[in-house]
Image (tube, rainbow, N blue to C red; front, side, top):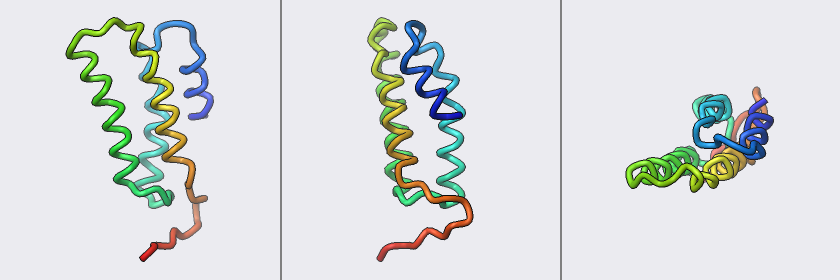
Length: 99
C-alpha cells in the first residue's frame, strides 16, 4: 500500500504539496521498521534523510515559493522511502550487527 500511495502522489497532475498527508502511511511504515530493528540501513541515515527533505520544504515555505516549485517533494519522499526500505529485513529475521 505505501508504494501505491507514493506512486499515486508522484503521478498526480495537480496539488502535490497539498496532498502530502498521504505520505503518512509510508512514513509510519519506515518508522515502525526502524523502531523494530527491521532495517539494515543505519537509522541515522533514515532520520537524516527525512529531516533533510522536510527542511527543504520548510525553507521553501519560509521564502514563500510558488507551489509549482514543490514538484520535487514527492520524488524526494519516494527516493527516501526506497533508501529506507531497500535493505529491509523480513519480520522474524534477526539483524546481524556489523563490527
